[in-house]
Amino acid sequence: MATKVYYSMYGHVEKLAEEIKKGAASVEGVEAKLWQVPETLSEEVLGKMSAPPKSDVPIITPAELAEADGLIFGFPTRFGMMAAQFKAFLDATGGLWRTQKLAGKPAGIFYSTGSQGGGQETTALTAITQLVHHGMIFVPIGYTFGAGMFELEKVKGGSPYGAGTYAGDGSRQPSELELEQAFHQGKYIAGIAKKLKKGAA
Image (cartoon, rainbow, N blue to C red; front, side, top):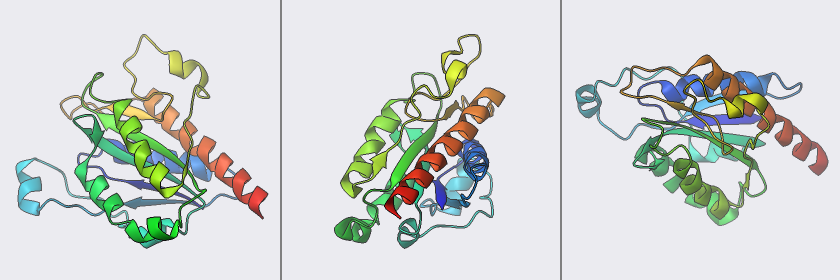
């Protein structure tokens, strides 16, 4: 089972997550699940931030991470790092860390930033520490997306670390190319998770 876990305030990361799930599900024999982490802000604060209502994607608990054969984590950037909501969720995984329940599981990262210099790489780099302490295997997409990695005529988020998008002031939505990269990431990591599970059997 390949699990996509994300936090999305304005829907950009959620759109990427949906495509990543489709990509993972396209791998024969892989069950893809989509989860979101709990919100930490009150409805009042979210209202002042003009955040839309949350989708009906189920809320994950830390214990449910251990059920996955592979994980792909997604979050928006806050000052070049993952959003506090996702960090709060990971901070609650101490029991999994103590027993190393996530050790050896492949994991990827995807993200959304407000601008081109807003953390497309630093967000992934600073998030890798979470995987390391859990003993997880970080799986970047490298340049496996092919020509799409070298697109210079169109604005495109993402990097060798993982799929990404630019939200701008919030009005910009993930482009077709960004969604294609997200689909590729889901398919690529699900394929690796499947191989690792088969090898361990």
